[in-house]
Length: 203
Image (cartoon, rainbow, N blue to C red; front, side):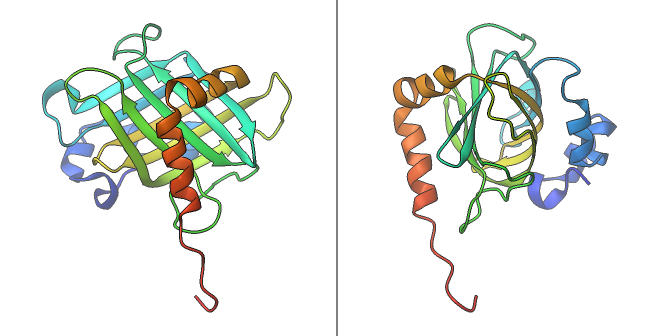
């Protein structure tokens, strides 16, 4: 199942979502990519109440860029209900190049890593991705290449993200984000990956 109580909290809450969200396999979401905005994402925030507990986010700004054995992906989400506008939420991922289903936030070896940011408002802040599942399609490095990504992510604050991303290559957008807009956050993520303990022989 796409959701389970162990990863995303109380099943009674999750089952109130549309049926296709929680019963279909993650690969089913991938088949839906390309049929709408660049990204369609369900955000679950069990620690919040009211309308903020479950949000449907859409975005037109979704970019990726290759670099040092990873595909970096950035999605800018405007406020819920909008497709364009000043970004309120940001999703940044670093995915091992050429790996169709990378492990997420694994302590050893190549892994998908990332963070989710609310840029302003009462709940502004950053939450690191700590688990979940990712499926990636696309290996071309051409300037017009795209990456199709389906995600089922859990963040350290208990939030969950489920949806699809169809990112177009934009090296400048990623470089500007990593070196000008959020250099400290990106560096923290990279250092966390390098600091992961090495696998011991026999284990």
